Length: 432
Image 1: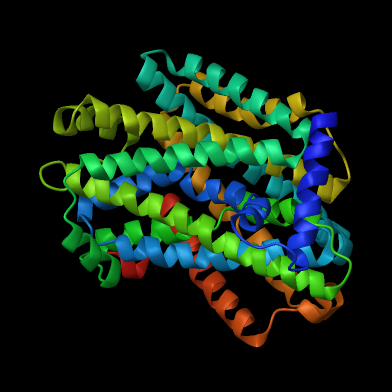
Image 2 (image 1 turned 180 degrees about the horizontal axis):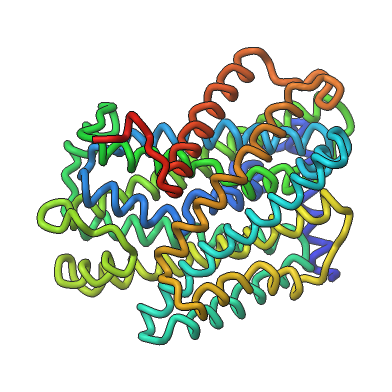
């Protein structure tokens, strides 16, 4: 533990000097880098892969603007979550327990636990699918390898926050480099990409349905909970001046980290548009995309695609387990052993596969569960950050409340549309 302690003390020393303006430059930004990077993994998880592939294959570059819009909403909510932790020194689950009626708190905990399991189902399956395709092994073996690797990564939490941030950051870097390679391999129509990014248009009702999927699954429940917890004890602040300084660094980190996540998602859409739109517009599943990429762009492109999927699945599964631990501790003040927490969240994934459920269908089911759970942390975050009794002088201003309220309204309405579609309820404006 001593090396970790020294690392933490060194980091805190640099943070304190940066807060007081005694040092500047790259070292300052690096020392504050971490919480938003971990949270950004939620926006590059395997659930995004299928949606982005479907968008690019079916509509080329036309829906890139939807990805941009979704990313801006994500930035706002992750910034609010980080702010809550920095200002109060507590996370969203803890504050919900303190400020909301007990029956509501217990309901929130139950829904959030189910959401944590659904999140891990998607992430866990994504990593396992990637390993299964890359190594040519059964899906269950891929799941077993994913389970072992994610558990080993989670054990690094015992050595302090910095090692975990470095590991997750490295995996995010792998995802980013893989998609940089993909857009270099694929013949991207950059003029079409710029047009799709800057011209809001929905070609038909099918495009509207995909846009609903992209935006409706933008803000992940576990990412909202987790970000507040990652910032609550990270920097030692003694007064409001120091809090404002930390908030400035945090907001910059959120913008940078989620911009990278947004660019990765755009690269996914562009790769799919380049490879599949002309002649393979029906591609909508991860497995189909992999098998189709090989003859179109070569084995290297298909391999890079799987490596990025594996990095995405493993990193997001780790983050999902961290969030589940934080949710339980915050709502119930109960801490369970890491191996038990890992087992609880991965058992549903094994049960789904052993029951013979199609992996892609399971991913879709997990997104439905997340859509049901999303209003819980989103509305709690909006309410808490608007309370002067909680935030003091850092209470959200009118413009921020309006922007966040509008963003929440858009996301929640689209989530209700997703749920209606999932349960076969007709949605008037989506009917042909």
